[in-house]
Amino acid sequence: MFIPDATQALRAGYLSRDDQLVCQREAILPSAQGAPLRCQLLELPNRLAATVCWDRCMDIPRLAFAGVPLHYQGKPGDASEGVAFDRRFCGGLLYTCGLTNVGPGDDQQPTHGRVHLQSADYRCVYQEGNALVLRGQMRESALFGENLLLRRTLTFPLDHAEVRIRDEIVNQSPRPQAWMLLYHINLGYPFLSEHLRLTLPQGTKTLPANDAAAMRLSDHAVFTPPQTDFAEQDYHHTLPPVDGSCTVKAENTSLGLGFQLRWRADTLPLLVQWRCLRSGDYVLGLEPSNNRVQGRRAAEAEGRLPLLLPFEAVHTDVTLSFYPLTPDSPE
Image (cartoon, rainbow, N blue to C red; front, side):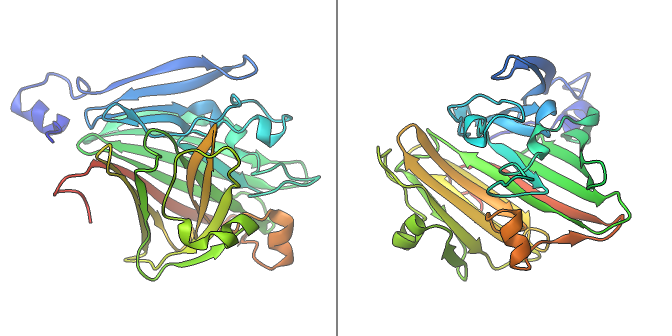
């Protein structure tokens, strides 16, 4: 598959501007409650089309490769805080969970935290070399409480279909602060179907995270058509790192498309899998995380709550790659 290189084409005289091959524009889209959401709409020569939502932690609600949508879209629209999680979880290809809670909520913490609802400040879009880059920062803070800053960089190489997510989380307070982070990556139809197969590397350790998963532990890598009364299944995978990173692949042989997820293992040691084949709620979640999806209180009680020292920073890297299933597909 030929993908033009904008930098080389500019130097060779095919282009007068290196942004000729890139369509990127800001748009205002309504939320479920009618409030405007600022987004960046992207159409790139690597056959990716994506929406990045500045007002939702720079998450990616929609993404298509070669004209095929890969994301899951939930029944609820994207609503603001104050609405129960099951009535505002909109899905999307990327939905960031944290920074002070991942998993069930309590009287202090909402389910999956607040960071998804934070708007990006200091936002910018620019072309650097042969890549389009979006940058911004979000803050989760409270009077007499946490002061966590998330600096996010999204890089879209123009010569191959990839999204690189580079995050820096900084504790900008004089006290140690717990931090929890999960990248809720949601694959939906038509990419998710009975033709999809999930491949985890040899040596992966898999534990069930709920009763339904314990009953069907060996089924985590295969998928069926939608079932009316399917009980969602959650798994915790610990993958063997290679050169500091973990990798998992999902491939749809009917569509001839593949997806690879790679992440930095030291700061994201766990992969959470959400397997939900219920009719109307048909989704595969692949979720690199620094903690189990059991909520802050359970993590604290088990001594599993990661801490950032005063003014300490931590970095995470997650890469989403998309490719046709050909003899040249990545191993």
